[in-house]
Amino acid sequence: MTAGAVDVLVIGGGQAGLAAGFYLHRLARDAARGRGGPAPSYAILDANDQPGGAWQYYWDTLELFSPAAYSSLPGYRMPPWTGAGNPSAEHVVAYLRAYEDRYGLPVHRPVTVHAVEDHPEGGYRTRTDRGTWASTVVINATGSWRRPFIPRIAGTQEFTGTQLHTTGYRGREPFAGRRVVVVGGGNSGAQIAADLLPAASVTWVTRRPPRYLPDEVDGRALFALATDHVQAVGRGEPSPGGVGSLGDIVAVPPVRRARDAGRLKAQPMFSAFTPTSIRWDDGRTLEVDAVLWCTGFRPDLAHLRPLGLSMDGTVPATVGDPSTGSGDRPGLFFLGYGDWCGPASATLIGVGAPARATVAAATDHLTRALENSRRK
Image 1 (cartoon, one colour):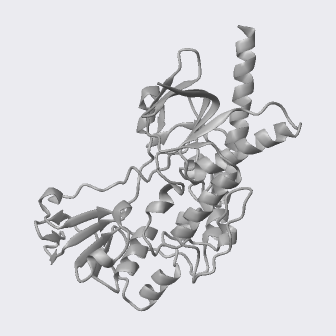
Image 2: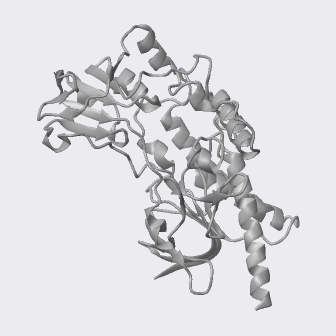
Image 3: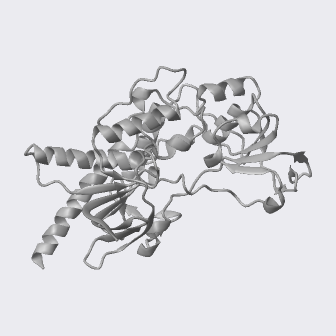
């Protein structure tokens, strides 16, 4: 079954895919007004049933690090948030749905991408559960939500209690009255531990002592720090210090209240499970009912295996400024995975600049590909 042929295929319909869609839409708008050359055709494939990307799966009490005015994608500011604190995940989902509708972005869903391959006639062939797409360019914006990471701990299979990753946590109610261990010293671990405190007996476990960013630091400052760090490194200059130089945890109000009340104290990482407990190296044990793994994610890139990409450590090798282009596959781009493909590109406020640069690079590649085909 053939699904279609386009110049640019965007894989992923979350915030990064929509940001790329905005700049592709703008090219089409400008072409319709007689400005610029012909606009590339494009489509966006989304594995979810509904708009909202990973935000539709976050827990109910999650809130952003920044106010709505500093949490927007390019072209359309997030509507004001009238609740307490910063916008909720539900507010973000509504915003992304409105963003998609505002620009009439051609999102196809639900579509599961199985493999991206070389096309016999050049470019790429993308196989999905709803047909095969041909394109000259692929912008991969799949994020990491579908690839949660859980470390290997001795005795994991023997533990008879509940084990859940961040991806499965939606609220404290199922854990009421239970003994819960929250593993992870980042934002998710701190926020979920604080969220559980009113309902459960919580033990927070981290590999190193928690490092809180200064209380006045929010998403605006984080974006500026990440940008300064990546730009300095790109120029071959000493880094002024990225986000990690300040700490790991943004002290959003619920976390700050729990911390200041002395209720958010971390224990060192345990070393093993028993059927009903966790055990530390010093022999201490703790009977627990559930373990929540707030231990992060890995980029969701399994569908790119047929391309045999070169790797730079644990991520594909990339080039460009920002470095969103594949190092060995012209016409393949990565968007929205973090600093390795654009400063703070995994955030709402940070993905706009690398999206703009990626679409510009994709357009240049299309022009070169067309010129090469004419010479043949």
